[in-house]
Image (tube, rainbow, N blue to C red; front, side, top):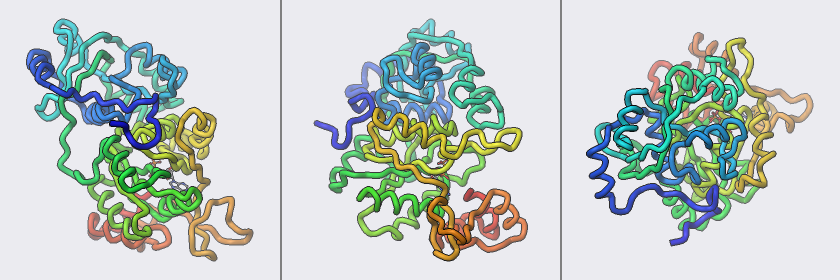
Length: 398
Ligand code: ADP
């Protein structure tokens, strides 16, 4: 059956789940087992369902080198982030003699990887290429250099089952399911919004403006896999997103959660996010200020320029196959009582914005959640989640 929606990255939506799993399940019993890390579980799920189309497995050595240096697979498609399976040496040795490895999660066999390649990557070079830095203050660099096993492996992947989730089940959609849902609703122009935070008013304004400018429906597509250390827990965030849905006109917005493991790679990450949303059926993608920014470096300076992600996506927009919707920094204008892009602020008007430092000051002084920054529906959920610590909830919104 034809897949509805725009063409996936590389032309076809990948699905690695085997139809009759008996032979693979039997092989899985005989092979050495590897309990996937959280990041690997997220990556496997998006590989399996085609969220990472055209990837059909964890990157092999040539593709890894090409992605690092040229942001492309060896077949030529844009691909900015290494999706790799890292293992300790003893597991690689066992998998090499057995010819493969069973990938497990919480005791369940999820997939078999037939081992074709194993190598020790230069992870410092990978960090420099992908993140543009080797500063361990960058959370992606820290993970790569200090929490990643020294070997990478690749080979054909056969998936028996997806990782199980007990939370937000009605909000989880594979790319094929989401494409069908959008088609059933008759939505042919869909603008996707990525976030890893409880949505605040600037976020809301980005989605409303994008929908209006494009005549589009909105796909709220927050990440519930792995985000930046210290972020608000997905269970709280999802309550915030749900609470916000009734503020949109009926039938204009869909909430779906994405099991992505973010790397906080700024511009490259934004390109990756756009590709993943294209695979899920979106026709457009919002990229705001400092998209997927990792916070300050060890000298307190930003790792990336605020518009670097937008610039990179614009340069590749024709080839990307998903419309890029860039936004300047949104600020709240007191006289207008609404958020506008900073370049649209009328002369002499006063802008309000909350910095991380200012939020922490409010926390220290126990001040109220400012309503111009946090919609009351979101504030109510945050208060419920952080009873007596509303200031902290504000600080976490940055
Ligand atoms: P992340 O980009 O890491 O997901 P957020 O959840 O804060 O972090 O951002 C979601 C999206 O909203 C991104 O595209 C980001 O660039 C954009 N964004 C966030 N705050 C603003 C703002 N004040 N002005 C313009 N864009 C913003």
